[in-house]
Image (cartoon, rainbow over all chains, first blue to last red; front, top):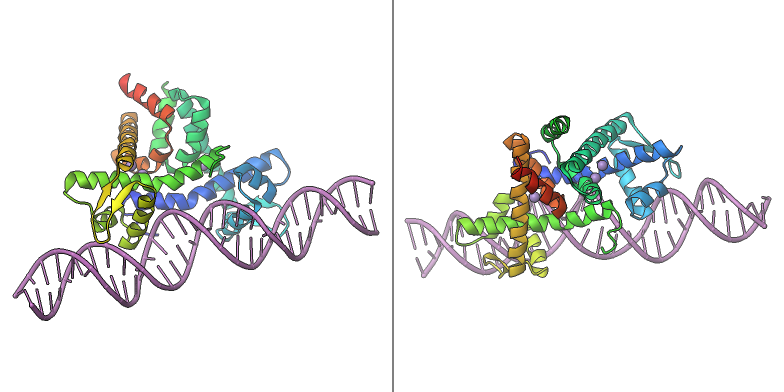
Length: 134
Length: 134
DNA sequence: CATTTCATGTAGCGTATGCTACACTTTCGA
DNA sequence: TCGAAAGTGTAGCATACGCTACATGAAATG
Ligand SMILES: [Mn+2]
Ligand SMILES: [Mn+2]
Ligand SMILES: [Mn+2]
Ligand SMILES: [Mn+2]
């Protein structure tokens, strides 16, 4: 996928990385709460089977985002940490923005989870400005 | 897919219908500009091969959103029209909102294409209120 | 009206993300 | 320490959406 000539292609590449973003963010979350992140932890959090988690972790490992030994815990590579932090910033900023806009928390939380992956840096900056001038 | 117990499950079901939403909206668009909507028209607009369009149209037909005879044009069922109009409303409102927020048009257009599918009615209403009080 | 061109369909492949069933490893507790 | 429980891996299947290559139907053109 290299052209990106229209908005639909853009959306498709977004989809390809949405999962990665959610997972590295979740891994960082879990590692902030406990000493290790296991397949089981991710399966519970994402509400998918451990099989799905295992396969996605393989892909993330092949992309250099996570490290994992068989039967071992999951950790983030520097690249993975970077993605996690960028994702987290977007996630939190978008959520704060929606709440400031008056969206009920339940809806805001749900909307954010999907919207976050499609919010450009430009839009993010506008949301920051809105929050600052509110 | 029936539980929807957390935000991730919600996001996944969103993905399942994103394509449908984009397609019915595109079909309605095309039918507003010319007398018939063909596979080729959709392939051009979505920038995918005609094969992909054909298969997606089969799915949409099986879901009762579109009607199509072999080698014939595509039309929307009443359900499809309904989805198209709801999608269009969300699409346009979100775009207008982002523009009002100060997002450059190019970014706003691109972001909207992905974000639209994850914006709840609650959030939409808040955006409407923002636009009214601006 | 025959032929070329264009549009559409189908076969077959690839990736990503779901699942269940079963095998294997690790951990825990009696 | 040894068997059960819990966790993880793998096989194999499903759906969705990409693609190329090739076959076939429809339309245009001389
Ligand atoms: Mn997130
Ligand atoms: Mn998310
Ligand atoms: Mn749309
Ligand atoms: Mn869209």
